[in-house]
Length: 562
Image 1 (tube, rainbow, N blue to C red):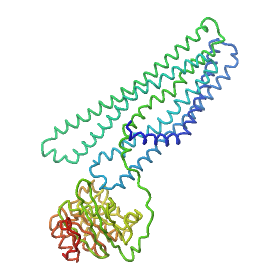
Image 2 (image 1 turned 90 degrees about the vertical axis):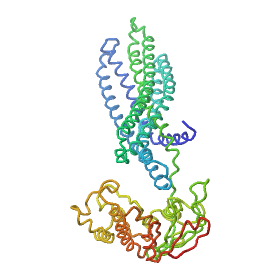
Image 3 (image 1 turned 60 degrees about the horizontal axis):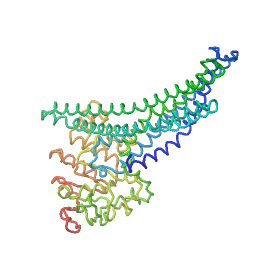
Image 4 (image 1 turned 180 degrees about the vertical axis):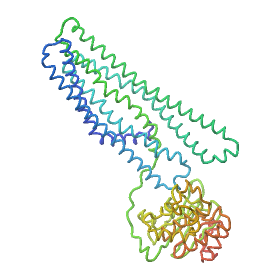
């Protein structure tokens, strides 16, 4: 356990122990019923074997044994149900925290992180925490409470047998700790191997056409097989190490049973008065070690937490609620976007991407951003979208600083179309309605017509219900861009950001897309970043102002008419 992960694991333990009070109480009740069962069984055996007097009470002990067994089964069922709820609640909380952090970081904050690694954190690593909360935390407390209750009863009935049980029980944690150190290291290596396999597999699926055309399919198959073999070997290593704790527990239980039997050797020589006590002590041995056995079974869940804790503890804290600010009459007067002496650098060791940048764009105006790759166009878009915050100056909407606005309200004001629109697996209608699910059928078709998508929809057998593959499979680049434009029309946001919206399109398709964007930009505040000559002509015809970011690298901002 590293210094960084220790506080995070302790915080999870604290939350888990607080939530596990009811399951632990139910577990303690189970132990009490188990002691009652052992006492009744001892009396019944003594009566059946004629080792003690009072055979007439055998029926009573049989009824008590059956009642205790039923009560114990019911209590165990309720405890299992509560344990499941503990794990489910913990997974919901952790997954919500992870997704909140990922959404707060946005694309800019997640640069350099592989999507398979992020998916493993939100899915596999969260699932690995289920055993910690649902099984390990209740088992940890029961490993103390259960043996303590059984040991106390044993001491009261026969102190020598009780002492034997307690000494044998003290040996178990030491053996499990030794095995646990190795299991923790092995579990961490297993998660690393699993993440490596996920990343490699996802990369190869995405680039499968390149692999086939390069004639490397067989090589990549062998490499994937080797990665899968490594994961299997490391998983088996975790299991081998974990079995050591079970072996130590079995040895301790066997030793306790042998010494207790030796303690009651006089029974074999005619001291029948000790028979019920001897049988009771022997039957208490499995009851004493049952909570410890349950703890040993789930001990690997604790080691799995150490394997995944590095990733969770490295995540920044979830964002705090932003105090609402008045968004002044956006619907009536439109949106005015302003940059006030904004500066930003991605890396402190390099020169700032933006330095002392100022401009103002009002309703119905278009701002054209030009410059070479790396000049800062995408950085400006990220600042407006709220993915990153300015290090100097501020970005305002209607005079209010962007970071003070309610995130949901800020999102409603923003429309964004990039060079590669995100198309989800689903129907065309679902992809368009993603911007505003509550839109009416009439509003939906208005957006389709304005995006010049109606002709395509009418040629499809299922129309808007036509299913699309992941990433827009089934649509050309221009058609996917029109779906994104229809989505923007349906959202009807007053501030529109266009980030290379016609990149990778042939001239004819680009001309059609720009015609749709011309209608979309009417009456809105528009920021357009582009390299395209045709897109610059579009901005010129609309009376756009231009910010040449290359010219601003070594000079203050100035407005240059297109």
